[in-house]
Image (cartoon, rainbow, N blue to C red; front, side, top):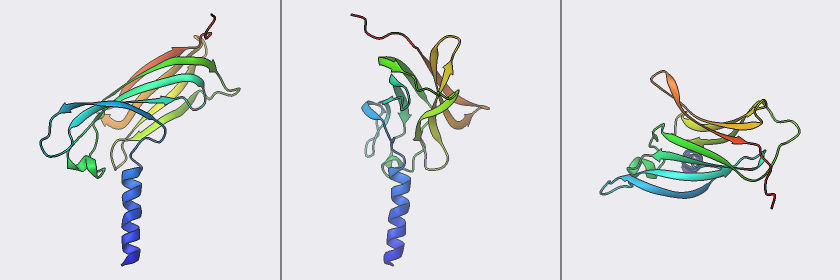
Length: 157
């Protein structure tokens, strides 16, 4: 019986704790739908720094479903989000920057749905491109949003 309880606790932790973003700063949420006896639907804004390129910060807003399922991590969040990335300091590119690299991932449901942000490098225009995409297909193509950061000198005062 003790083994079953430990197994259930482990499954709960993987499902619920694994849903929260790994390396974001939550900025705040705005309730969008009132629910009398359970958490409201909302849109939340989080910030994250590119883990490989210093000097770039992205802000992502995501719709989050309320209700009692959200309390235990069983609600599937809608595939609606927006992203804005900006230079927030001197940009330092690593020696070997991959053409595409996953820089952010957040689970938006217990089963196989997440939001990812992939960084691409537009060498011709010296610009970093951040593409946010949902793994859930909506009418034949995934929900997506894009932001670009031109690599510019920083400071100069």
